[in-house]
Length: 158
Image (cartoon, rainbow, N blue to C red; front, top):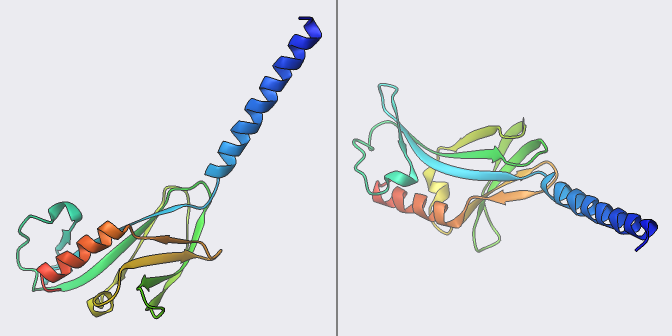
């Protein structure tokens, strides 16, 4: 092998590595979000009790008192800022409830939470919650997490 051939092989390796690196970076340089949910009960004294998924088998005292809400947290796990626009309840039929999120831009690694206080909208044929950004991209709360929250709602009569 001559020096020219070695240089050509080296250039091919560098170019291929650069191409692969740029493809990987480009795929990670998008808008991505992660959704999580919890049920909050605010006692009359102002203390907040959170019913998290990890507390499914625990006893939580006096849930009948205070304001209750279904809190959804959207965390930006991508590298681009997200501007949240609205959420909707997912059901097998075409009809679903929609709510407006005040336009809010969340930067990389930031979170934004909003609450649904009317538990009646979550009952019935609802199988999930989806949130949309201003570009029309959507993210859904994981099915297992939503199912667990609905079971908690039934268990504690929320």
